[in-house]
Amino acid sequence: MECGFLLTLHSRMIIRAAQKTGTSQAIVSHKRFSYLKRKEDLSNSIQENQLPGVRVASKVTSMVLPFVPITLSFENVHYFVDTPKKFREKVLNKKLHLLQDISGAFRPGVLTALMGASGAGKTTLMDVLSGRKTGGYTEGDIRVGGYPKVQETYARVSGYCEQTDVHSPQITVKESVIFSAWLRLPAEIPRQKRLEFVSEVLQMIELDEIQNALVGVPSVSGISAEQRKRLTIAVELVSNPSIIFMDEPTSCLDARAAAVVMRVVKNIVNTRRTIVCTIHQPSIDIFEAFDEIILMKRGGQIIYSGELGQNSCKLIEYFEGIPGVPKIKDNYNPATWMLEVTNPSSEAELGVDFAHIYKESHLYQRNKELVQELRVPAQGSKELHFSTRFSQNRWEQFKACL
Image (cartoon, rainbow, N blue to C red; front, side):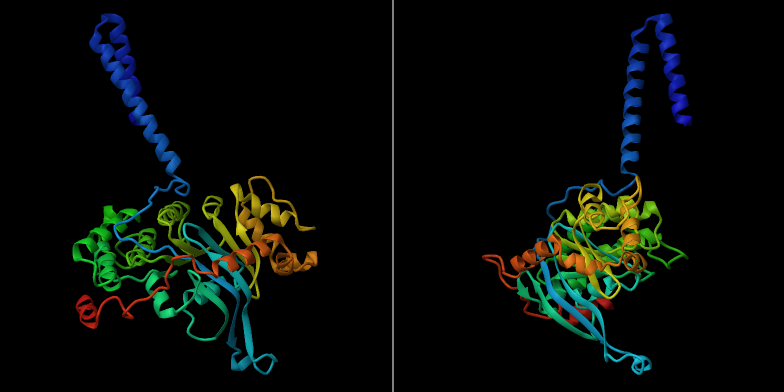
């Protein structure tokens, strides 16, 4: 405001001088002011357009280290856990059915959201597909690139960003990323190329300007919560994965911080990686940054799986087509509306079963066809294989930790 007032005052003085003296110097000065003013207006416009931080993402197509884009398909996935002892007398079933008949696919360059009410099983589904569930019983067919999933191999090409950001507080941002790269990148990659990749990751995640800052303790010292979340993503990305799972990457962040994190996520998607995120009641801008959504209801059942469409038009069209579902209001958040009209009380009031409606829909048939297509390996592709379980031998692991 103050700068703009001074520039305007300076412009008027120059114009008056030009009118009185007619000197070319005053005219030149006025032209210079006009150029600076246009440049200032353009800069302000760019900053205003980038403020939401979701739709503006750099078009990244390749990186220093190559990777193989992969698809993850899953068909008729069920997940059970043993019923706790204190409930066994009241419950006849010895096992709790947490996921029921889940089918779908995650593809390269597609940002997919897993959504649903609390207890719907979205985090459980992500943990089952990523191989982090060590207990319970899993049934169904899960394939990576068309080949049956082998967890030891799959762990080498996948990353997982937990909801809680755990980092060593006594090292810098860059050292955190270097440590992860040292342990997780293949041993045959030269040190110099590894450092180049670290620098590229820091730039993509927009941490290069604070790379020498200490991580610190959350809410006490060091980097902010939003920067800490981006560091969590960078630590996983530097392992050069083909698929990344993120558990609520925008939780506990304000609107601006969440927008910055989503801009970074979109940058990663543009490298043709597969990214899956659980998300809980996002804003309109963040919600519409996703390409596809899998919506679940309590009991671990899918009630929508497909594209969002422009301004969430495909999602809205699907649910408004169900008899009794109220129309969305103007300027209302589609994510909030979607969760409201599909909650258990609304379902009971309408007397419908959204999971049954989904299985009778064209979306279900399209997804089944897609899964069947991705079950077959692409021509010329090879099954993932690594000669060792870990990227580095025990001596290198010991040196890195020391």
